[in-house]
Length: 242
Image 1 (cartoon, helix red, strand yellow):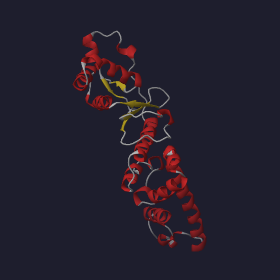
Image 2 (image 1 turned 90 degrees about the vertical axis):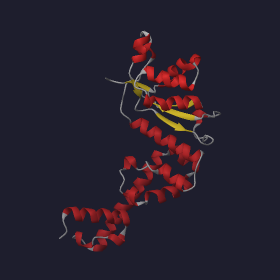
Image 3 (image 1 turned 60 degrees about the vertical axis):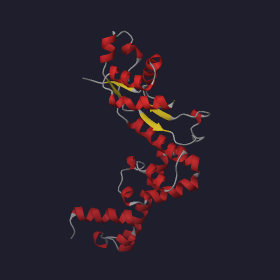
Image 4 (image 1 turned 45 degrees about the horizontal axis):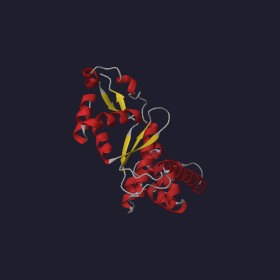
């Protein structure tokens, strides 16, 4: 008699890899009846994986069309490491999979944007810095004001034409896209190349003064505060608790 752990492992392997791994000695029913039940259960799980991936990338699904997306999805979810993956994380490696399959530009950018949107949605809550937090601060206090990147903020470099599925960005040609969730709604913010480089520096800035120094290295003094105000208005910063 196999141990409970061994039996569970063999049962899961059968569900993941099919009848060739059927553990006949684990069931009291006939092998035919047990296998029939397992097939039904495995089909349900397989369908759920495909639906979970489609739900993670609805715009990419629409962009590619159902048949093309579905064919890619089947190949993706049948990989061993995806078979063992939690449903909530099933799409985490899909961008790398698309690149391996020769996709780039529009499709890969869209996949990255959709996964970043999902991570922004799932991220921890944090109160964003707002302009009223710093409006009345003296210069020394403003420069010492502690900041960090908001956990819902994500930065995506754009490498090809934007998909028509990103209707809110129609007729735009940004160098990057910032995804932020300052309140309940997740929003897309197109960025220039300079704004993209500035946004990358948030993670290296422990104070508003540090961030300003980085901004001054990338832009001129006349526009430096405009860039910081934009980051605040987007909701890219949170107050760093001491």
